[in-house]
Length: 135
View 1 (cartoon, helix red, strand yellow):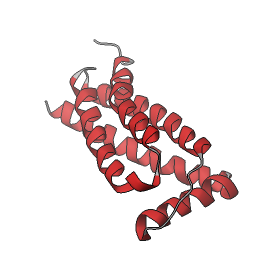
View 2 (spheres, one colour):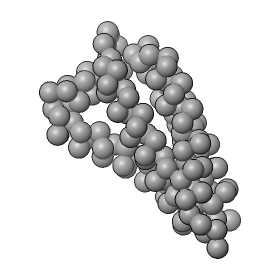
View 3 (cartoon, one colour):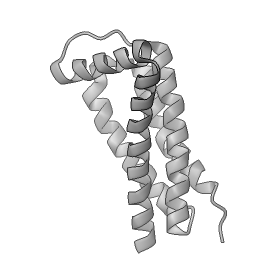
């Protein structure tokens, strides 16, 4: 049980680190596209105001979210030594955090993005866990 808890915690922190890290890397690589939009989004959420969202950027976020969720599910399963419960609990934790972000960013992002991104967290985490073969 301790390994499952450690796996879930490690998977969650790995997800957060890779997600934030990828946003920083993309902002540095594409400062006029990704960076400008990312700063505008953060400013709108912080202070309110209007924001026009770039669909390409939202699709990039979905792709990165899928990749990061699969990776974190695999890590959780690897550390836990099993590939069912740790990815499940991690997926639930990511889903809870995702819903908090949805509430925070609801007026700034289209509903299709909220639904798609949030709906993919749990299954992609579970798929990542399934990539770890059972012993």
